[in-house]
Image (cartoon, rainbow, N blue to C red; front, side):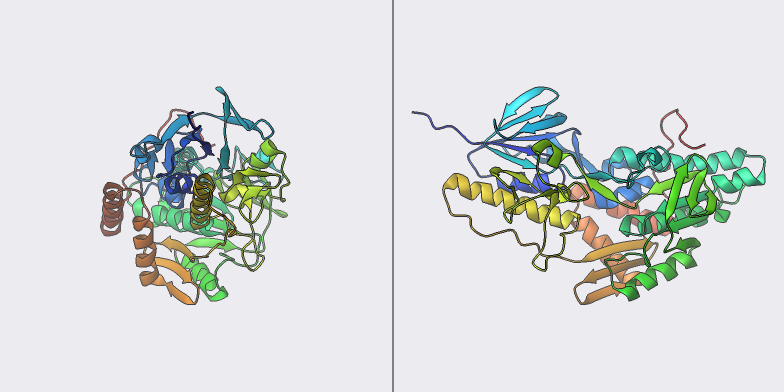
Length: 420
């Protein structure tokens, strides 16, 4: 009598999903990876695509290529529409697929805190498509300013607003300042790109709230030095085609980038599970969905608490730890071994770069900033890229940019016009 091989479906090929699959590489199972995109994106470097430092192919790789050597795994590019937990069925745009174990690693999307109508004017940064759209808006703004005939229009076109003072917002602000002050400084004749105004808006009292106050103060000082206007304790009350409202103050701007918040994918809704305010599914200590021990939610889609009762942050190391844990847990269950240990998150630290020769690093009590922090940040990110070839290419691109002050991916693609 033949023994049925367990069917495992992993939805999402981000950091958590890939780590789950890798942990199952030696398991006798039929694994299916489903993602609506055909590539895995290294999200921590998306801002470098958005600011023309790297091309999309340098931080994204085909999922099939990554998993080509894992013979127990099939990759499908499909759109998930829902889950029927009672029947153990995943519903996609191509039909239904049964499972014995299901792992939802579907990540997060932009959150506009109830103002979804702002999205067309203030794109967020979560995918390659977002990055190339933002890159296009930034570069087109300079081109249109060169054509503009009145000072007011030029000023609006050369005003860039980044909403959100977390790592993404800080990194974008520093990179756009570098584009304006260095990369494009000598490229135009009718305008001076160095006159561009970059405004970083944060609703809280300081930038990078996950870092120590002295690190946040250093970041603010560096950004101010390179020409970024930092506005803390400031709420955005409106975004439209002409700019942003900051309380009663109107700030005309052609380019707005949203880096203020995220919300979970619809995983909790698919399952009918209890969710937190950000839409993340509340899971058991083993990351399974209450009432469904065969279904797991990980990464940004899951609401998980650490050993101190604080929410596990939505960052790549956390997703990878969850994926590794769930993969090993499923492997143990298939092998008939006891699996009583709950998930325990280990925070490895926080890193953020502010631009050329400046970054902050916080690994527990170990802290770096400035030039040494910048080197540490660069080495850490190159190390976690996939493949030796990509590590070499990114390292060479950064070295070239550092020596020449140039950015090699300054291409304006698509014929339609994103910038007013």
